[in-house]
Length: 458
Image (cartoon, rainbow, N blue to C red; front, side, top):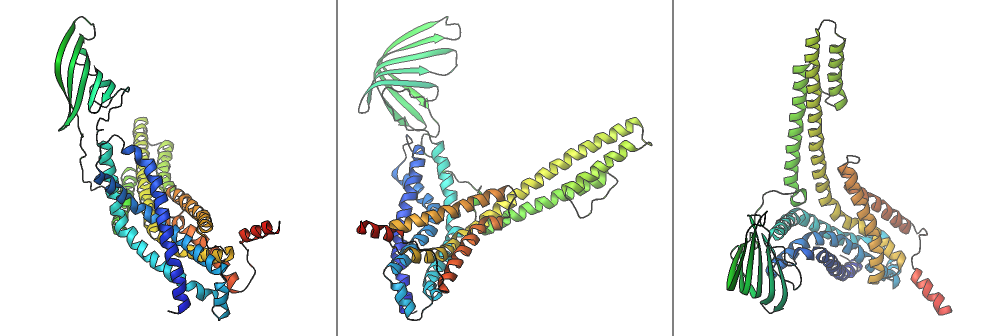
């Protein structure tokens, strides 16, 4: 490798690491702000919180790495252009294509690593994160009692405390919510709370218990006590870790998704054979080859018209055959709905398969775009590179989301849905590179320098 190639590679490395750390921090902070309500009042240990964050860091990293490559490319080539190092390298007879090759090598290495990560690491991390999130959601709160607010998380009871001194509560009021024939109200001057296995134990002191029968309020009982204990059973008081073999499309690798696709295709073939058998057994026609909705339902409709036009059938036979044809049409419509559902599943898995490769390849695409744009911008600062990369990444992500939505509706093939954004940006980047290679005039983006000169002149 030549000296200038090693130099350009080094120029990418530090901006990539720096921008990746910044992006991970920003995306993780945004995720925690949206997910913090899942943890509040759950009494989770620090180990569970660290595990939950670490598992979700997988998809955050898969999203941040391509964007970090774009930021690093803009910073590296922006600084090289600003310091006229690109011009110096060009004067030695090196073409723009040769200058960009080290960046392509860098992007290729990141791309291959990200493909392996998306296929081998990310699915398992997503699966474990979803399972842990479900376990956290099922866990009961740990009774973090707030003074002056009703606590409604206790099964069959509501509780209000008016004062608190450490672990000791004062002026406690408890209402029963069960319907076992009486209403119970408990007052206590003092009390404390203790969590035991699958239950909450209330220790009450110096209070009264009032009970009244329901629904006629015919009996009333009042009981004073110096000390009273109330045991309240609670399921899932502690976090229970569960294993789940069920995986969504984002929790599978390519081999698993291909197996799912084969399963769906087999189901589609089974349904189509069933439709052929329905036509052959309940009509005088045979379905050959074409099993489209128009053809299949057209045969059923044709048989219905033949029955209605037949003068050889009695009214009873005609009515019976018409009823059978209507049942046949309902069955065929149900079969077509199944085929549509299975086909949608096939498309969904193909979208995820293409996404596992399209996002890593975006690392190379962003170099195609970022290198010429960085040279034109002639600015190597993180702020400028971050702003421009955010614009490109928003465009890329919008195209990706729109493509996925169109693919889910069957309006676009999974390939074009996931690779369309890469193709569009690649063409844009190649056009810029070719114009630079041919020494044609391209847009200048050094607006900041122009504005600065105007300020100095003023």
